[in-house]
Image (cartoon, rainbow, N blue to C red; front, side):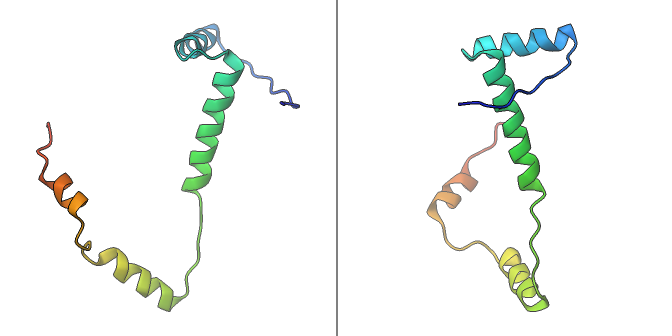
Length: 85
């Protein structure tokens, strides 16, 4: 159950497009806006995750990133597909 209100100010054009998109998804305005805001918030938080490594762990991490991928039949099939562009 929701227990906190969020109040926004929007231009009429913004409200119209939000309402149209919500209707296309079968959602009400509140559900649509809240879901979109939470999706964006999660993306921002995930992009800002910081982790710290000591020099030894950083070298190990870099070696793993630089190493060629191990044998992977799924990856091999994927790499054989001709791109449409």
